[in-house]
Length: 291
Image 1: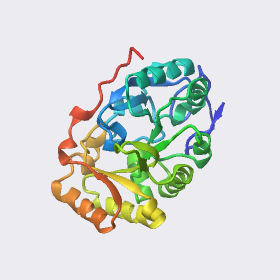
Image 2: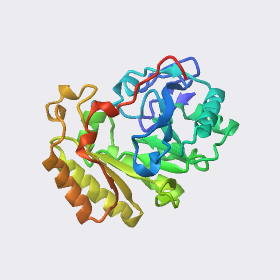
Image 3: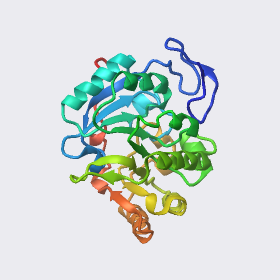
């Protein structure tokens, strides 16, 4: 296929055997870990974990990505649509609260096939960097129950420098609007576990509190009471972050509190992390050999 799945719309020829384009991947999915995951937000992980499927590659190229080995270096093990459907069954049998597709857009045709083979009886989470095409998201309507996107930047220049994304703000706002159109406000069951809706994540970066505050303003202005937000303080330098002076340290308590206070002032519903989460201990252990 001539690939235009993500906003880069690079038009590269990608087949099950031929790699190319911005992501340098074939259409055959690659995974780095499939297992219950306990370090998402409380309504996603709950007590029994989220059934996370970590895919190789990403629509973004974040220099500080904590999953850099798989998102930028594309490490992983090939898997078929049929095998993916069997993994959904296996995770479901383990009692997880949902099936959590992490950075899946680059493999969307095969992933859609996997759900045609088997649709789980638990919610499906689309865990994305948020830099998505509306046209691609529309193909997920009826498959995805919960969207879990990032909204990283209020400044297109920052997005291009740190994540290789052009026209980031407008593109991500359009994508988020489509997600909310499809699923609406985050809805929880009686046990506090998400069943449908949208939960937006924002990671506070060191030396960039102004960016975070403006992100909150943009989201509040555009989505109002439909917005549920997860404010993350887990930043720790990973990938090539140390090549960028402003990204070469963790955030300070003062930086995080400044953004958190603005979140409370705007009366945005959601969740916030403890700064003790800023550690590499929470990065999953990848499994490049076994599915």
